[in-house]
Image (cartoon, rainbow, N blue to C red; front, side, top):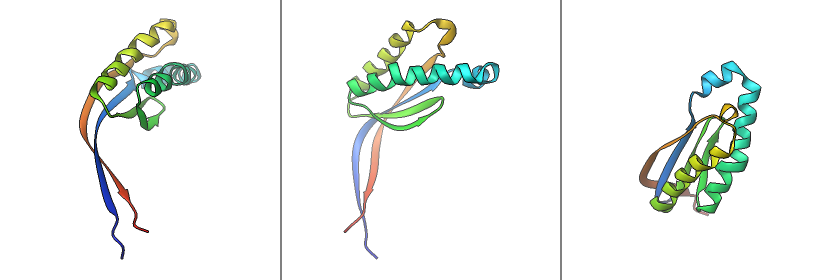
Length: 112
């Protein structure tokens, strides 16, 4: 059996989610999904890319994003909150970006 090599690197993880997404989906599923798609395409992804983040996991109502810098993660969280102001309040789900964590990411590389 060949053994793989573990590679570790320090990262800042930002967790985001849509506030009350279950309630919003229950009230109007199509409208909520459309609003989430618009937020992801026009605010979420561009702000993450601009600040050097990498989307680790994206779900309908949230995501996990890795950054190499805590400053970039905080700037991204602020810009997400500011960016959603451009959408009409009645059409915009609230984005929660209050959770940042620092830790090691482990990636396993297979030996050739």
